[in-house]
Length: 374
Image (tube, rainbow, N blue to C red; front, side, top):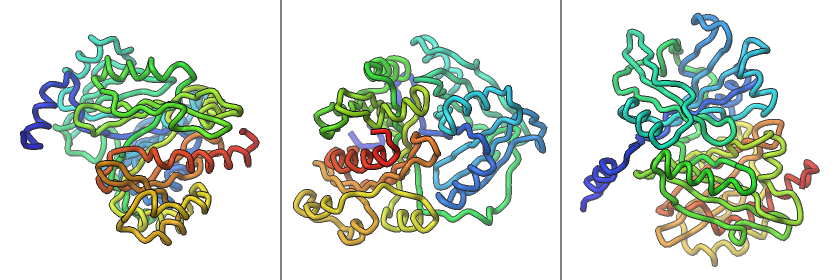
């Protein structure tokens, strides 16, 4: 069967076909300053705004884009606002992951029938640019999934947002789209939330890693990667495993005060150029042990990228039967050791860098030790 026909058949079989990630919403203590960081460090472009100047009195939101990536950063303007309460308990972090659908009404019926906890009923938002239909459901912790139907909307983001002109601060870094988003949950909760995505959203188990795959002598974790039918949306779910010391997942759960989004993987077509730009713009990455690169050629074989440049930048490489991938991880971008980013370039491989888990864990534990949290 031709690929396009196969994808079409898959969509017809899904009870909840997803077109991809629409946006990720962050709650922050100071959205203006957070937006400035993402513009100058990650190269995001400020495209829209909502706040007092647009008639919204209790909050302000900044919409940022690069490639197909769209971030919304929201802050409260009153101390008793739910956003302020969220930031007080969790610090800055991801609150909402919005998924695009062709038919919000059908999507609502599908997830409600399968037991989703509805947070907001389907709503129509209209302005001179058209109509957007949305509703939201609960996921792990206080994470929210919003489903967005926007085929009849031609505005910059959503009704109620004012478009902004050219961004003089934005320094694009070649980021294209969101590859995957990882959630951390408490020990014993991974299977529950994997089942949630399978039952309620129609996802399938894409890959599974246990504590033999992801561990050091001190700490370990387990992970199930859940993906929708067309593979455009992938949500790995992590839980801590038994270890001699505190794992990165436990550190996250302690500081975030519960389950939440641990990291977002952003795809690029040229990771050397992208990481070079991000480093020069102030993004801090994990330090990879130099011994990793001594055995790299024998482990992964011939690749297109110069090994000396990969070593200089700290980029990891892994190969599987489909090809290889290159990846690198930032340090946490908040004061709390919670949210961080992965930059990834895929050269055929659809995996998650299993061969790099050991080196990555060593680097993460070194950072934990510096914070006194190992």
